[in-house]
Length: 154
Image (cartoon, rainbow, N blue to C red; front, side, top):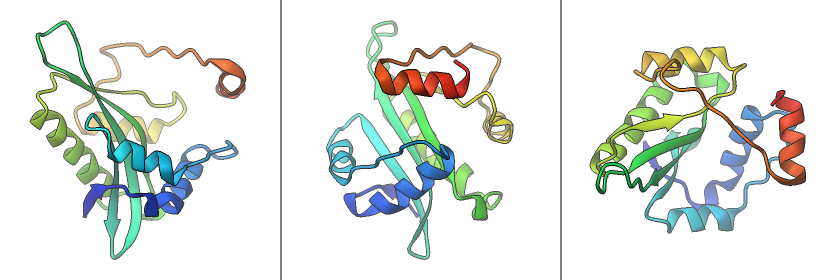
């Protein structure tokens, strides 16, 4: 089952994010999850099976002035528990995100993935995402951002 995360999912989301960013000071706040849930343009989704959260993704619907009122979607923090990868959970979650974007009239969906996550790149490519259409750039801000940039090599 795919659903919007609730504040009660904090521990599960924390665990998945720690797996995504080992050694990082990940800090998921239940009140932030609640704020996201109340934002009509933001979706913190989880995939749950047998009462256990096994995957998550964060989607933001962004307004765009270029094509009338057509927005676009930005995906972040795609994580599937290592123990259940290859079972279709991530594909189901990403399909759900795509359907949400279609329902909202998005003309494209964008995502960034660490340059080191080659398995994730193959997964995204298999779902129809192209890593050659655009080049992603990031600029980290503030002390936390400088530490992230130093660790990731840019």
